[in-house]
Image (cartoon, rainbow, N blue to C red):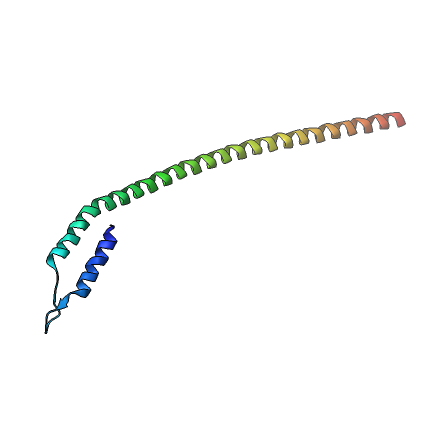
Length: 117
C-alpha cells in the first residue's frame, strides 16, 4: 500500500468517526490510527529512496545530455572551421585563376598589338 493510500484511509477514518457533542472534536479508533501511522513509517523509506533514485537518475541523464550537446557543438564548430578554410582555399584559387586569365589576356593583347605594328 502506498503512503497516499494510507493517508486516504486515515482521512476516511476521521470522516467516519463519531463527533463529541458540543465540540469540534471526534472520537477515533486509536488502534486503527496507529496501524495507519505504522504503515506510513514502513512505506516512507521506500518512497523516499525511489524519489532519491529518480532525482539521481534525472541528474545523470541531464549530465549525459549536456556532455553530448557539448560534443555536438564542438564537432559543429570544427566542421564550420573546415568549411571556412575550404572556402578560403577556393577563393584564393579563383583569385589566382582570375590573375592568370588577366595576365594571359594582357599578353594576348600585347601580341596582337605587336602583330599590328
